[in-house]
Amino acid sequence: QVRLAESGGGQVQAGGSLRLSCAASGSFLSINAMGWYRQAPGKQRELVATITSFGSTNYADSLKGRFTISGDNVKNTVYLQMNSLKPEDTAVYYCYAVADTLISDTFSRDDNYWGQGTQVTVSS
Image 1 (cartoon, rainbow, N blue to C red):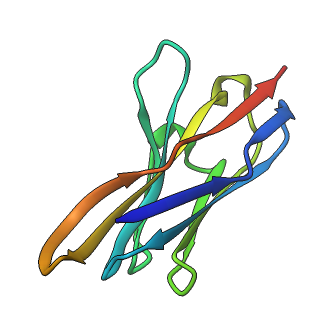
Image 2: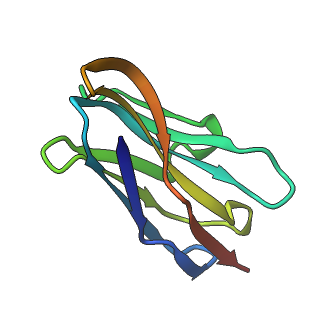
């Protein structure tokens, strides 16, 4: 099992910045990718950015240039630096991980895990 602990959410004025962190812990063989999704009220959950263990990144097109994802493989932690925040960035941000696990002699590849979410509120 993989547990994801998010931190760094909060309230900020438009134009400000926030940095989210998410640390993975628990029993796993490897963390293959981590990332962030977000869900605004009344909307579907959407991709923000992901990063693989090799450092390959993927961003939602609308967020390129403002958001930067980075990772620390030693700490099994992913970060999301959010700059020039806009009110429309207001959402619950969820950490996401893809991991291989070996539990009770059962190997499982590329299982998906989610954090509980952290609220980001951008006021105008």
